Image 1 (cartoon, rainbow, N blue to C red):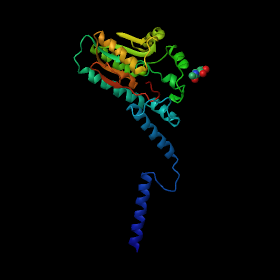
Image 2: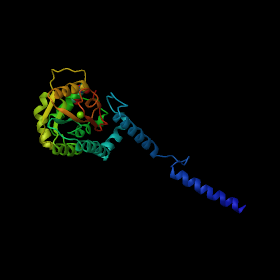
Image 3: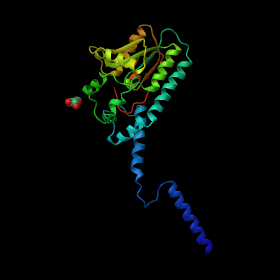
Image 4: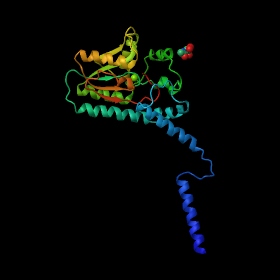
Length: 253
Ligand SMILES: *[C@@H]1O[C@H](CO)[C@@H](O)[C@H](O)[C@H]1NC(C)=O
Ligand SMILES: [Mg+2]
C-alpha cells in the first residue's frame, strides 16, 4: 500500500512537472497564449510574404502591427537584412569582375530606409497614401539601411558598378541624390528614376524595361538587391542572382 502511494505521488509530480514545462495546466488561464499565438501567426505571415506565397496585399493584418513593430525595431529585421546582404557579398567576392559588371539596387527600403515614415503610419496597416509618402520623401531625410550600406561599400571595393533603379519619379532626382549622399552612398554609375510619361502596367514591367536598356548599353547585370519581388521577377535580368531583402510592411506589384 505504501508503495502505491509513493508511485502515485511520484507520478503526480512528474505529470505536474511536464505540464509546467509545456505550460498546459488545463485549469489555469494562460494569459501569454493569445500573444504568443498572434506572434506565431504574424511571423508566419511575414515568412509567406518574403517567399511570395502571400502577395498583392494592400495593408498588413491589423493584429500584426505590434509584431511588425517588434520585428523592425527588435533586431530581427537588421539580422535578416544582414544575412541577405552578406550572401550578396559572398557571391560577388567569388566572381571575376569585368569593367561593365553592375549590381542593381532598389532605393526605398533597400538602400534608404523608410522605417521613419512607416513607424508613423502603423507599419503598413494604413493604406498607402502617395501624397503623404511623397511629402516625406521630399524631405530627403531617409537614413541608410546600415547592412546595405556595408554591402554597397564592399561591392565598390571589389570593382562593381552600382546602379540605383527606383520607382521614384524624375522630379525627385535632386532630393534623391542629396539624400543618398547624406546617407553615405557617395558614388554610383547610374541613378535611374521613372519618367512619368513612360507608362507601364506595374513596377515589375518598369524595372524589366530599365534593365533591358542597361543590357543594351552593354552592361552585364551580376546581381539585383531589392526589397520587392517586382525588383526580381521580371525579364532582362542578365546573368544576375537575386538578393531579396525583407519588407514586411508593403507590397508593390
Ligand atoms: C492622404 O492623406 C491626406 C492628408 O491626411 C488626405 O487629405 C488624403 O485624403 C489622403 N489620401 C487618400 C487617398 O487617402
Ligand atoms: Mg524598394
